[in-house]
Image 1 (cartoon, helix red, strand yellow):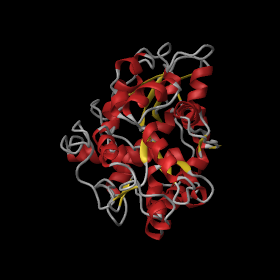
Image 2 (cartoon, helix red, strand yellow):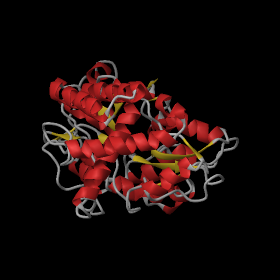
Image 3 (cartoon, one colour):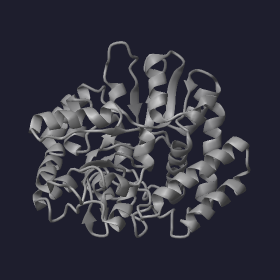
Image 4 (cartoon, rainbow, N blue to C red):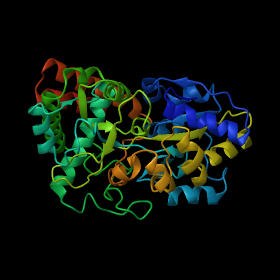
Length: 390
C-alpha cells in the first residue's frame, strides 16, 4: 500500500519491475496516508508506505516487522549515514527501526519562475510581496497542512529566540543538521511534555494569521497537491511560502508550467528548519514472505537505485546520494540542492501512539478557530487541551 500520486506510486512500480518481485500495489489518498491507523493497513498489506508519526502506534500494536536484526547491519548503517536531515531517525522508536526512508520531504517554498524570478528569503519580504499583489499566493491550509505550517512557524520562532545555536547542531550525516536539544521522543525542545511553549505558539499563530491575511482565500480548503496543480496549470498563483516540496512539479513537463522550489523563508533570510515529512517503507509483521519483502525494501532505498531508477520514475528519493547527485538535480531544476538546507534543519513531530489522533484533532481545532475568527487564547487553549487528553 502506497499513496496515490506519481511520487508515491511510480517509483515503486519501477522497482517492482526492475527487481522482479511479484507485488501488486494499491494506493490511498494523501489524506488517508496522513490519517489511517497503520495497524489497519498492516493487517491487509505486506509492504506499507508510512508517515513517521505513526511509528509509535506501529510499535505499540506490533503492526510492523522491526528491521534491525531482520536486515543486514550494513544496510541500516548506509541509510543512517545517508540520511537527509533526521529522515532515518524519524522511523527509529524505542531502540528499533520500523521503516526505511525511501522519500524525504519538508515544508519549503514554491514559486513560478515566469511570474516571480526569485523567491523571498525573509518573511517580511514574502508578506510585502503578497500584500502588494505583485503575485498571488496560495498556502496549503486545510486542517492537516495548516497544522503543519503552524508547527514550522513554532520552530522558526523558537530558533529566533534561542539564536544561531538552535538552527545549527549536528545532523545524522554530519551536515548542518537538526536541533540537538530535543525531548525524549525527539520532539524539539520548544515542545515539552506538557505541550508547546505558550510564547512560541502565540508567536507562530500571529505569523500564521499574517500569512493567511495576504494569501488567496482558497488556502483554507487546499492541500499541497491542489496548490501545486493550480500553480502548474493556471496563470494566477505564483507563490506558496510554505508547502511540502514535490519534485514532480520541478521537472519540465509538456503542458504544465514549471514550478521551482527554494528554502522556506525565515525572519533573517538564513535557512531554518521546518516540519519533516517524507515517506518510510515498512514491512507488515503479518507478511507472508518477509524475506522477499525485506530484500525489496533494501533494494528500493539502495543509494544507486535512489539516484537512478527511483528518481527517474518520478520519485523524490530519501537518500542523500540522490539529493546531491548532479544529474538528479539537473533533471529537476535543482529541486534537491535548492531545499536541502531546510531539510537538514528539519524537526520531528511526536511519535507516541496517541500522536496521530492528536494531530487530526489539533489541526481541526486550529482550522475551525481561524475560520470562526476566534482569539489566539481560545485557539491555543483548544490545542493544549487536546494535547493533554491524547
